[in-house]
Image (cartoon, rainbow, N blue to C red; front, side):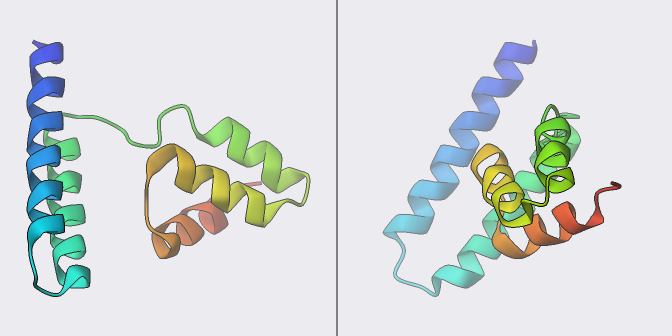
Length: 93
């Protein structure tokens, strides 16, 4: 069941992204809508996009490497710069 949900989620995300890249409309508006839909899917499927990320990010923060922590979090989650910065700055040290 979980594999089926993951497959359906991946197909839906791929479809949304395909529409995003083939559309001639304002990309920032589409991106915001796509992010919102993906967030809803993750919530519905009870998938935590930050699972397994915190420890490495915390270690980077504790060693004074805030920018590297932000870069690494973005690589791991694919989240946007603003939400990544907010997340990283909100982590408890």
